[in-house]
Length: 444
Image (tube, rainbow, N blue to C red; front, top):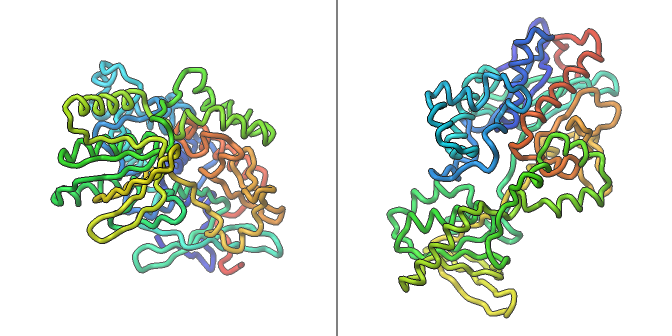
């Protein structure tokens, strides 16, 4: 992946993407279709730390389904005729008729991951896997930042790519509560399937699952299935699992035009909208899964063997690891009574946080403007607001919930979002005439 240097010059990409999850994969698809249309070519390359494409592999449970319609794939909402659509994937896999007969808008999660891999293989010339981005350095002409040099490492080799624009798709990071450190017996649900394999021969007797959302319910169900001799204790502060609000009107919060409205709203209105519609995505569970877990609890009460225990209106106040087991101290929020649970593992299904991209930016970080709450200011086209001396664009794929709403890191609006980012890059490129394909090396 080392860049070619011609006569002391280095090639300049219009776009370098950091990370290659679904969002930057969708951007690579949009770029490919743009270039194939005969429009002015946009050059791009993406860098991904993983050895191949992967999306939440630790939660690819066999029977888990997507929570968004298959039509909200990598391309359809932007280009309904795209060859990268989920329907075209089904046709290529000879499953289109079977899927239609299935009469379901929501594919298996493992099937959608296979679709992502199928699409990624079609644009693999645009991505370098096994490549970790170490830093970004500004390239100066006088006081202006004219390019960005992306320093990356692949194996033992360090290389640089020079870009006019960066698209930062650094994804989400597993969130553990303050004071909790992951270990052999305490872990985040993102590692579920990898950990389950290691537990099969240990004959576990108890698990504690912390959380009230979809992932927590899925973890409780899977551990209950996979380990029939083990007790599964679900701990959450609510009275019960709450159903996701996927009603037709509420789902309008995911519409592309909802982003415009949210972006133009005042801070109090934005906060109110997030409160109103948080149940469409956060700490919410599919009703079918809620009903299934309730059936299990009731059946076990009838049989007199209660393996699935719901410790509701409760919270873990202390969780420690003791070599052969973990100990969770659970406190009732209503009575204050505490219960100690020794478990083979404590699993935290406590969500994700967007990765902060600014540490990668080094000296550029001070040029990224922030609001009164210390959050990055972001333009409508997902560009970080920078001081005027930064000529290129620093675009975010994720981490924009405070400016663009609930779809910031979700699949629902991915295809439309990358179309808007690409349009911004193309328009800004056209506004700067005669930009060279090569730049003189060593202009920092």
